[in-house]
Image (cartoon, rainbow, N blue to C red; front, side, top):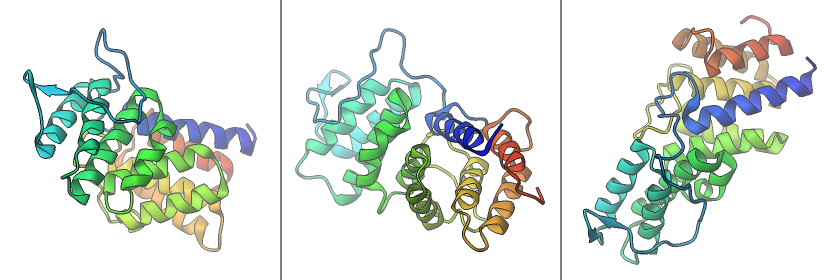
Length: 231
């Protein structure tokens, strides 16, 4: 398999990983509940209810949206996160949380690229959104995107091999997968010292997840096939 094809394989691994289907990520792997039609709207939604009563408190609605997300009811979650964004009284933190939830809900229902716009709205302050944005940038397969992905992952703390990424919500990305993502970004950027950084990151990822069929294992094997030594 040539370098271009291997890169494509890893990009697809990252798409699956960010969609909550990777090994050890903690995601449900489901896109919608039975009978539910996934929504990809990024516009405002109205009429979302909780327990039959229209919810007007942003924190309660955010909690309800994440509860739907955890169940795999992504269309409902998207609607509720959008409703939060229509509220004029929300704080910057609540707005970032709503965009973060919207990005992950759209990623789960339609793929990581669909969450890109929402992630960009939250990534300056929200850790999970930084991970989501990095995934979307990697999926695009552009050198400038890898650079931005590295910046996002490093700003979370993943650049430190002893850092432990723990998501607040079940977004489906594990600590090992976050380090593996950064390893691939370093390798593909290929600046001075990046091979050493990639080696350190993927070795840590494999220490954390040494299974043979996970996203980490696939990224590890692909980097090895691409020529990264010492792993």
